[in-house]
Image: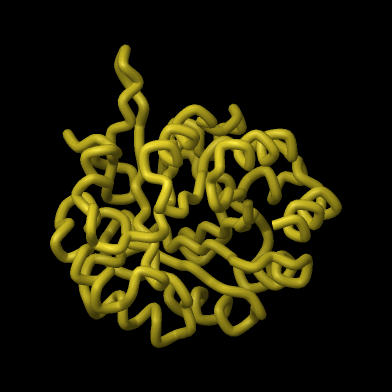
Length: 247
């Protein structure tokens, strides 16, 4: 399992949201490119970068910082936020992004997302399927528009729509755990891998420490996205390097 450090950008700053809420933001006094370089130098193979302003508005708003980040690192960069149209896909790829993260379109316009998988290539597209787990049956239901809008579509229904489309990479975030430091939804990711063994899942949300990373590795997910635990020092550089070297 790869550990992919996450960098979220809002209003030009590195931040973390609490449970996806734009009114509960923690800012960090470090520039995105500087942070990405530190992770790259430690041996990260990929960096995950999200333009939160773009995710909420549908317009890429921090492209200059994404460009700086892509130029600063020697590893792969996957980035998204505001990817609603072909032009946004092309823009990200043109500035050095290796994988484009597609979120709301995968739920609201799956035919366009399927077309991008075919035209751009499944290796260069990551579908970000963000879920809220509510109700007695704990069905993971999708949310969109920077986690501000709910939907009537379950995670399983969304993934079934892409059967036969060559989908390879899926980033699944449990937004009820994201930034909350309550531990990841291990059972959810184990079920994802069990239902769709051909997809490489990236687990996101709730990672507190190295123990959580070990638990996620046992589910069979391809990668774990880690943000706040790294920024707050709950996972040390030494622990991070151990996971990066064993991936």
